[in-house]
Length: 66
Image (cartoon, rainbow, N blue to C red; front, side):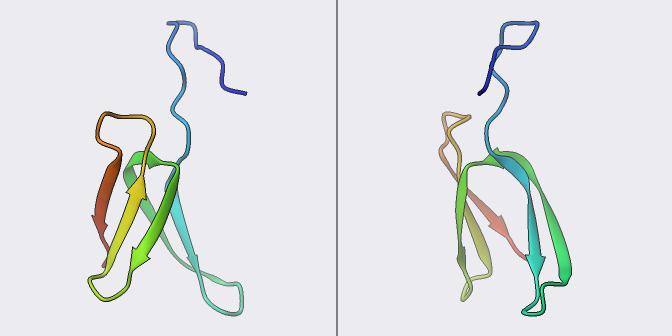
């Protein structure tokens, strides 16, 4: 459960790390995002991670994958 902090602000929900694994379960890459997201999908053709956030007025974020 999210509870207000000492300065009476709610902590961000979601996460800012995306870990990528191969088919054998070995971690091959970690992306550290500049914002917290609650969900995502991958656009493989355009190499984009499309993230959804409930922590901001801008609910959709695009991250270019390397």
